[in-house]
Length: 161
Image 1 (cartoon, rainbow, N blue to C red):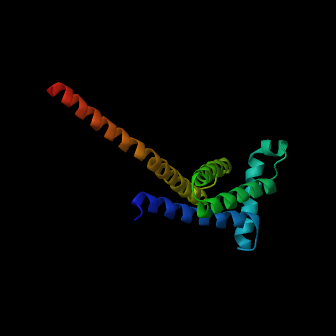
Image 2 (image 1 turned 135 degrees about the vertical axis):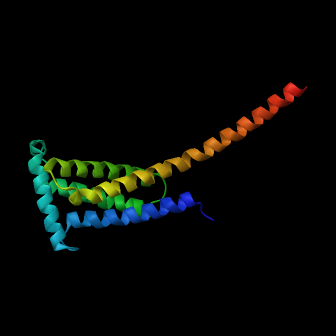
Image 3 (image 1 turned 180 degrees about the horizontal axis):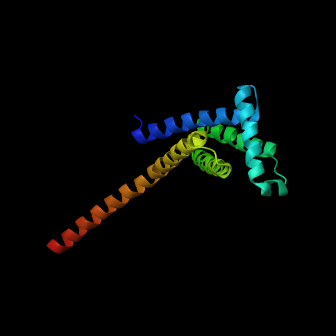
């Protein structure tokens, strides 16, 4: 039977992956929701206006939206379907995207209700990454405890003789 930690990681990976595939698709195409797509276009135009440095390096609002949308779709697919270390890389990239999105919302002065989802999903990504990293470190600690126990037993034998 799978450990609770494994179940948590799998459930978070799957749910977060699907969410980011959905949100990235909304940024890339109007097929899912024309209203949401229009809102994304409007929002990314305001982000590009607030960051004139993007224009100087050749990044328009359309390119910024497509880059972030593509990252979300790609990393969401990895979180949902690909096993192993690539999930942690995708998780980290999505966490960086969420930090950038939070920065954009703060930059243009959006109210909390406009970026609460980014805050919540950033926290969920952080939790998933911490749980995944903790499960990797755990066996080493248990091995260290066993070794320490054996060393303590050997010391006690030496003291008794």
